[in-house]
Image (cartoon, rainbow, N blue to C red; front, side, top):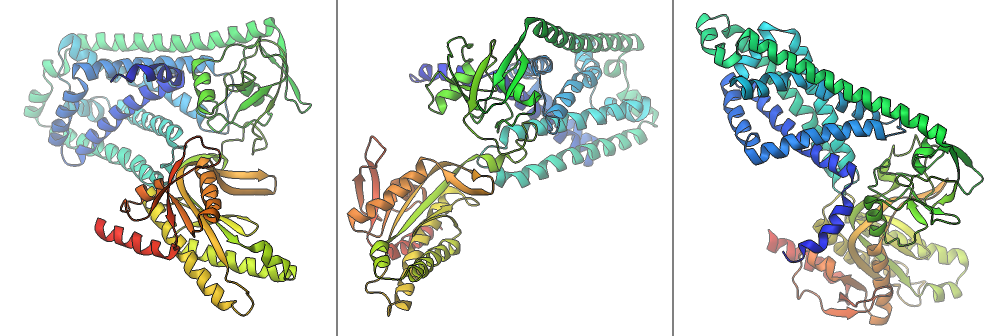
Length: 577
């Protein structure tokens, strides 16, 4: 508990307007999911819907939860209106404008329902539950059924888009996407079917006079006068909401007029390209407006740093970084004041800069169509393997003979990697980087890499036997294995782009491979791999090793004979089973 205050400033810096809107949106989406599942009980019976709504309201009307919910609803609505005012440029080829339009339409559609049910209960103690609401939609006013159906679909699509924007760069999203898609389709489908089944049942039962006398009392649906009062309140609130939207649009127009009168500034991209824009636009918005390619994986939400720019010349007159921008720059280890986020920097005078990341797409509007290919953070296991003595091998052979032997070596290594679920990724001379965990959990990936190392040793033995008549000494090798968070994506230029992984974990694996030469062993495995693979602590001898580029020594495990790794992994799997 004593450390909590230390992290509070960082938490505040990490939370911006978009993060607050996301938190409020998640709370509201949780309510929508709960409500939809309650509707789905109509596929069983109306009685089941009433039982479900009892527990639904018991939770959501619990005072602390209700305060959080209504605060989130008002905050989310307010931030949506602010987004309409604040956002100067949209990517019309993406779903971002659709999400904003859908979100802004929800309050207008839901106002009547909220006033009729919630305010009716507060003012007149109306006990409107499923029988009364279904009677209204299917018997008394069928036209409202279509409005409610549209509202449900809009709220669901808006929420799903928000969840997608939130999760699409998460390491688990690729694996979770099929299940999330199934839920996104099944939940609203079952909900609408439940409403239809329940409504049809109520429509039939409402023909009975006794049912109407029990379910359409004054305490349940109120009087005509009370209904008129609630309708006037709903109409007034809806008009007020549209007034807020009109005010936001008017403020946009006033801002544009003020910016034009305030003068234009020139933004020079450092490659000869210069654009003139009104003061107040961010650098990224300027790129979008003038169709200048500009990398931005997160779409200008300050959730990544790919839009970074380096200011050319004096940067003292620039606005100070916002807390969110400062947080992102700190996270990527940037302390240089000349480096800024293009999505957050709103210059007030002429500016020259160049982009630190070359965009992959032809225009700023078209970017972000394939975010996973631009960069994604994942836990991967990196295996580096290198052929020993290739220099001496080449000295006494014709070049093509050397290439033949190196290719056979890399073929044997690749075969072992593929057999154990890995991906041969980079070939550098007589060495190779293999990745594990692209489609497996971390524990499985670590075990696959260990088995692949054993498989490499076995395949090299077979290759040595096959080439024994041509080799003065057997082919030897060194392997380094380490796991951790890395960035995977497409790296390169134009037609020379390759998929690979970048990060400290990859670098450490390469360093461990180098250390096999000095420690005279076939493989070195990091402590992280041993722990994640859930191998016994005494399975391999431990040693402290100084890793180039790291201040502190690192605990590693030395493997004299890589063939033994298969037995260690198999033993661990049997114990776990």
